[in-house]
Image 1 (cartoon, helix red, strand yellow):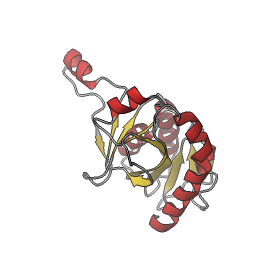
Image 2 (cartoon, helix red, strand yellow):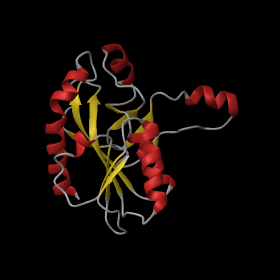
Image 3 (tube, rainbow, N blue to C red):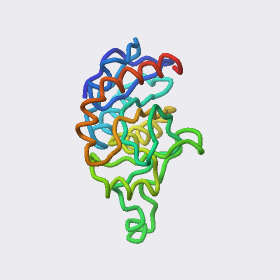
Image 4 (cartoon, rainbow, N blue to C red):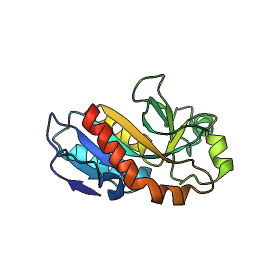
Length: 190
C-alpha cells in the first residue's frame, strides 16, 4: 500500500490497484495504491479511512475486463458483486447472507463482478457474463470498505481487455492509455 498525497476532509480520495493505473491521472487529489486483489484493497482502504480524516468520497479508478461483446470505454458502476464467493452455499450453512451485491451507483448502471482471479479465458468470461458486464479484482472490496466507514463511493472502470484468452497481453498493452482516459474522466466528473 502506498498513499500519494494527504487525505483531507471534504476532498475525494482516489483509489487504484497499481501505480500503472495512477501514472496518467493528472490530479492534485490524494491517490491510494492498494495492490492487486480484494484483500489488499480492503486492508489498504480500511487502514487509510480508519486513520482519518475522512474524505468526501472514495473514487476507485481502474481497469476492467469486458465480459460481453461490444463492452468498451469508461463505465461508472451501478452494482458490484463478488464472483468468487459462494453466497448461496454460505447461506445454506449459516442462514446468514454473506457478501451480497452492493449498490454503488445508478441501479440501471453496469454490474461489476469482482474476484481474486485475473479472468483470461473464454469459458470463465462467458460464465461471468451471465451476471455482469465488467470484471475486476478490487471493486467490491473498495465499495465494502468505503460503505463500512460511511464514505460515499464511486467505481469507475475503463475496459482494458475482453477477459478472454489474450487478456493479460491486452492489459499490459493498454493500461497506460486506460490511465490517461480515466484521468480525462476524472477531470470532467470530479
